[in-house]
Image (cartoon, rainbow, N blue to C red; front, side, top):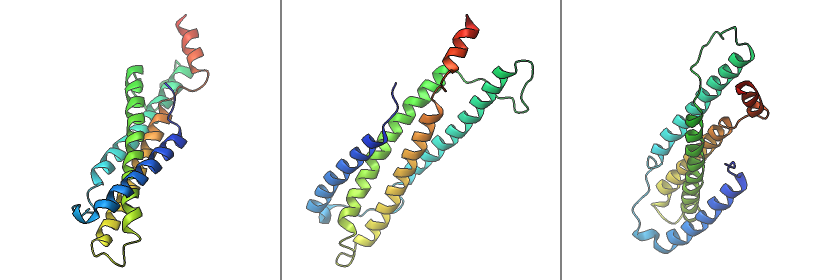
Length: 167
């Protein structure tokens, strides 16, 4: 499984932003208003993934410490992490990174239309606030997902140690 490339996420977000801008520009008057709280459910997912990344980091560090000194148990004993859990978290992280990039592109496309129209359209102010919140929340989701994906990587040489100890 290869890690998500940051460049690919940026290209996807830019392409979605352009496509969204075209759609919003063509039918802005027919769209319902965007409220600032619309992107907040993604913030919950971003917080959960960031907490998961932090917890996984602590558990893996404790597991590595336990392997280095098998006779001693660390002060903060954590349950060992199952490899399938790490694989599932890695898939979740990659999917969330892609979703975050798409959502950031959608809100950026809205902003591309509403920011220039702030002075002439009354609805543009609330839609701009929603767009800014949306871009920030989507960026937070993408960053949390990339952090979780990073924590799921096996450090160099750890595969060799596991293979040597099991032989």
